[in-house]
Image 1 (cartoon, rainbow, N blue to C red):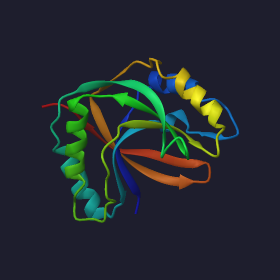
Image 2 (cartoon, rainbow, N blue to C red):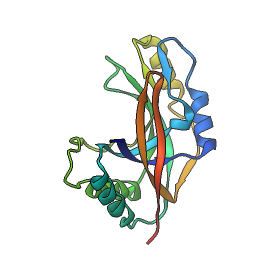
Image 3 (tube, one colour):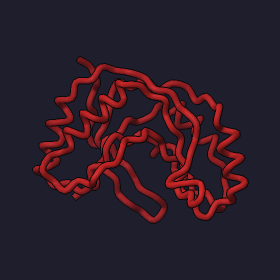
Image 4 (cartoon, rainbow, N blue to C red):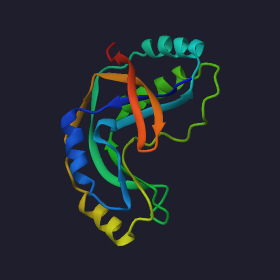
Length: 179
């Protein structure tokens, strides 16, 4: 059973700009730029019947194309214990409408993980005991960066396979936006 998630892929130009931000450091495990995405919903393990239902319900989503822009970086879970380096997005109602529709579509009588409030972001790196002074400087220096706008005309269903060097994501299906 594949681990699934629904996401917005990013254009190669945006991925390249974001990759330039992340330094090569021993305490920073960079995510490969090809894997950058904005997760709308992690679905988890899914059998064939649930997958067929999920594909059908995702295909029924009707949201108009929209855009969002890259915002400032941050860390999860906190500056006291930073484990994930991410970059946020400035988004309006259309992104949140799409995410809510995906959330409803993912409720397909399967064991899906409980969701907290949607915080749109793109994971850039995993952190292992980072130097806090460096991290504060990095976050401050990148606070005003402009990586450009992302035009969203389609969202995707991905499978994710965990490997020692990080997850490998494979696009399984595309869902064009439009009324």
